[in-house]
Length: 142
Image (cartoon, rainbow, N blue to C red; front, side):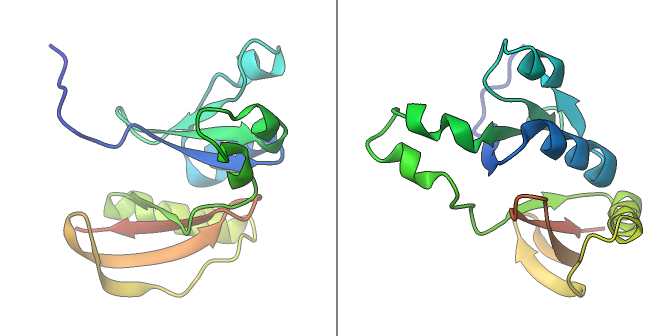
């Protein structure tokens, strides 16, 4: 049975090199890449990475901006990343991500404590950037 309740389906991030971005999100952040081979073979316009069973991040190459015609001015959003995307993780995965980022010399912010989010106040959170400058927040509630 399909659950049709309201939820976040995907976020589109503008990136310079979708394959390199997918590699970063797989090896550094720990997300599963989708459609990378199909992208490199020219079969699809962009690859994605899976955040969870219900949500993906699409890695949209800047080169597609001129073809963005779904709304007037849509192409103008290329190069303007959102303020940040927040991913909530279990505590152990949060610590593993923080360690992987540090091992790969990805700058991370100081920890924040008790910051408000979708599930109330998170125990800890921190921020980091992907290779294209998109800002991500990692947090855990437990």
